[in-house]
Image 1 (cartoon, rainbow, N blue to C red):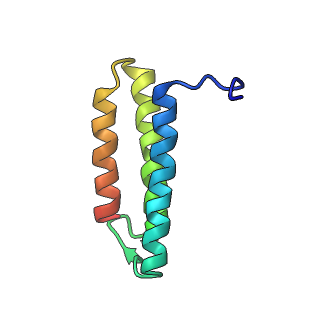
Image 2 (cartoon, rainbow, N blue to C red):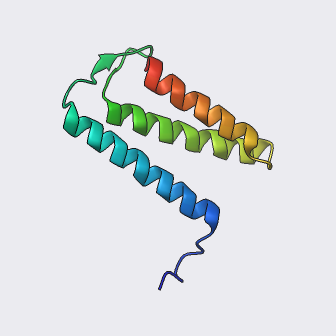
Length: 92
């Protein structure tokens, strides 16, 4: 059924995490609509969705740069990506 893509546990966990994050942001936005706009450290006015997008985009670049420069293992870029996510939701 899903033979068109090489599904592995890390791939599955990535997509589960991605859709879980989007579901949480959706539920929060439904409960408290429009309360998340703020001007952050970069001078941008962002919403929760914008901050989630910046977190995911930045994390992808962190992992790609790490793979290109250092290779494996990927525990260090995971920590950097989590720190980037905390920064994005706290200061951006």
